[in-house]
Amino acid sequence: MDDILEELRSTRAALLDTIAGLSEGALESKGVIGDWSIKNVLAHIAAWESWVVQVLPTRLATGETPAELRARIEDEDRYNAEEVGEREELTPAEQLIELERTRAALLDELRGVDAATWERRGPWSTWQGTLAEYLRTSLVGHEQEHIGDLRAAAERVRE
Image (tube, rainbow, N blue to C red; front, side):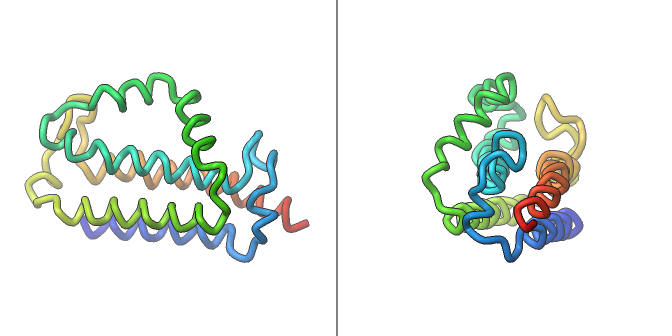
């Protein structure tokens, strides 16, 4: 568990370092990452992490993925657009607070997971690895995918 918690911490620190020092205007500038702003990407990351936090107890207790998450995964583009749109009214500072609030909720949830659950392979029917491997793929990997885009966008808005 300590290893995955360190990976989550390290990746989040890298993400925040990438955008450190950018003005609110730079964070809100549309079209720097596809149609999105940097703030929109942060909203997207927070939304996905929120989904993981919400469904993790059910997945671990029942071994199944709740229907609402299955629907989200099946129509990922639509849900991404909706979730980012729902957070559009947040200022960049508020979005950063939301990102950290969501991470704190995740860490609280993970601290309550017992050792046997951390070690169990295939904790739910659609995942055959361990919980740590899922978090590494689903959260650490997801943030790492976006860090490159954020870095390039941050360079563009700094110019």
